Length: 183
Image 1 (spheres, rainbow, N blue to C red):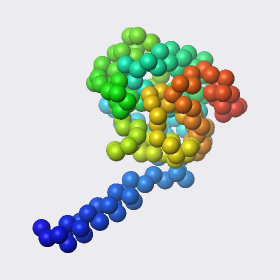
Image 2: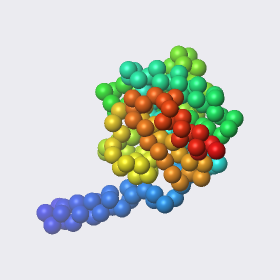
Image 3: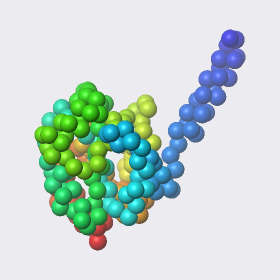
């Protein structure tokens, strides 16, 4: 292939990458369909009208005990309309190396997790999942810093608030946003 053909192909691909990877921030979170940890396709539209707490999780992290608080918050507020959604990610020091089956077993056996868990996804950098592009775009536009970053999404699916990894799920500032969104 000639050099001019390579340059043309590269510029075409670069153009596709920037536009094809764009996420419509004007659409609600319900635009996404995700794979559950059991590999079943689930439209997030299933959760329309609910307040969502979206968290990237990992089994072998110093913050993994946050599963306890996530489960407690899920139990405490689920009847009022809060749903915690866990998204395993293996991007931070390989702290989520297991299969979906192993992750599910770990979460349910060790922490009694009953909130929805999803298949492993990429939450930052190359290959970032569009869901996380949307969450980041709706908040501070900064990359996810570590496991257990938390996003609260409004009932109408259009607004999001972000809390860093080290902020506990039951921290006063998190609970304040949850309470405000639950009404």
